[in-house]
Length: 554
Image (cartoon, rainbow, N blue to C red; front, side):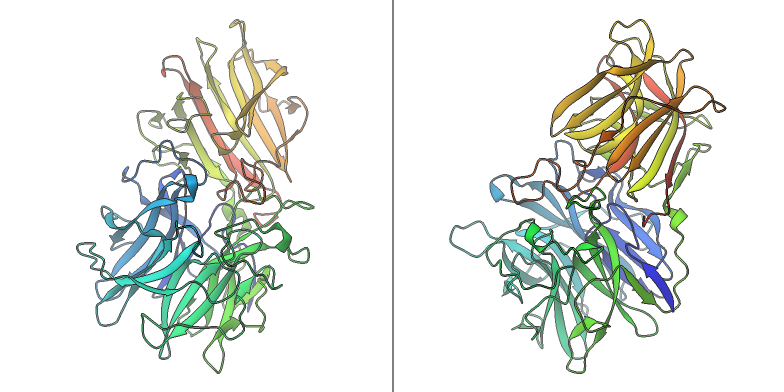
C-alpha cells in the first residue's frame, strides 16, 4: 500500500477527466487562454503522472482576445472500446459578459492519446461542460449543463442529456434530467457511468470556490428519473458543513473555507476503476497561501479512493465525504516530486512540451530553436496584450521554488526587452527585463509589474549590464518574489531591489467582483521578449530551470 500526497498533478490542472485503457491511465485538464489546448497526462500507478501532449495543437481554435477565465473549459476524456478511439469533448467559452456564458461544444478523437487528433466536430451551444457516454450497444450520449439566462428561473440551469451521432455531430432530443441532487446548487460538469444495473450521474456543485463538491444520483434508465444520493450531501468536498445555495449560479463561498483542511475547493471529478477492481475519484483542489484564502497555483488535480456501499451508492473509503491530503493506493510507487522540476537547455529542436503560451500559438514566426543550446524569442506585443505576447511559460507547481535563466538581447529601441517573470494573465504579471535604459545609452536590468491592469515601474531598482547578457533568478516563496542577477557563473547572486508581494497573482487576487473569484487558471513562470518597435529584436535564452524547494507538494 503506497501513500500518495495530493495533488497528484500540481499547478494549473483543473477539471480532471480520467480514463483507463488496459494498464494505462490517461487524464485531461482545462487550459483556458493557454495554448496548446487541453493538457494530457499519463500514469501507470495513479500516483506519478507525466505530461504527454495536448489535443488542440494545430490552431483549431482562436483564443486571441480571450478574457480571464474564458477559453477552453472542462474537457471530458473517454474511450470507445468498440472503435478503439479516445474521445475528447470540450467547451470553448467565448463570452461571459452579462452572465450569458456563450460557449460552443466540440468533439475530437484520436487512436493514440498522443495524437494526431481529429478536426473539431461541432456539437452544441446550449451550455458548457460536455461529456460523452459510450453505451455497449453502440449508441453515444452527450451530457451537458444547459445554461439558464431567464430571470426568475433557477440558475445555472438543468443538466441535460441527448443521444449524439459522433459521425455527423447531430444531437438528438434534449432531456432535462436534474438541477442537482443536494442544496449546494450550481450543478455542472455531468459525468455518466453505468454500474451494477444503474446509470450514475456525477455532478460538480457549489461553484468552483470554497463550497465546491461532487454529488451523485442514479437511475434505471439513462434519461431518468434520477434519484439523489440519500445523504443529501456531496460525496466529496473540502467543507462538509451544510450549504444551501440553490439559485446561486456560482460564487466564491469564502464562508465555506475549512481551516482544518490542508486542501480546499475539492470538486469537479471523474471516476476510474483499476484492473483489480478498486475505484478512485479524480477531482480538482486548491492549496491557499498560509493564512490566506488566495490560491496562486489555481486548481490542481487530486485523487481519492472510493467504494460502493451495499445499497449501491458511492462514498470515500473511510465513509466520510472530506477530501484528504494523503491517500493510500495499492501498488503506487513513491511519488517523484522532482518530476515537476524543469531543466531545459534547448539542446535540440524539441523543447520541453510543458511550455505553453497565452492567447496565441507557438510558431516559427516568433520562436527559433534551430541553434543547439539557444532559444530565440522574437519580441511581440507588450505583456498587457491579449493577442500576441511572446511568452514561453510553464505552470507553477509549488508555493516555494526558483526559476532561472540566462538571457541576452541587442536592442536598438527602448521598447525592446527580454527576460523572465511570473504571469497570471495580461493584467497581472511581474517581468524582470533586460533592455535599454530610458536614455537608450546602456543596457539595463529592471522590473515592471502589472497589478489589476495597472502598470508599475521600479524606476530606481535597475542595474547596468556591461557584457550584454545576464543570468536572472526569480525566487518565489509563499507569495513573495525576489529577483537576483549575476554576470558570470562564478559570481555571487546580487539582489535587484526589494522582495515584492505577489500574492495577488492568484485566483482570488485578480480582477474579481466582491464575493466572486476573479479567475480559476493559475500562476505561470515564463521567459519572453517584447518588441513594440519592429518585432525584429529577440531575446536569446541559454537555459530555463525551475526547481521546487521540497518538491511540488511543498
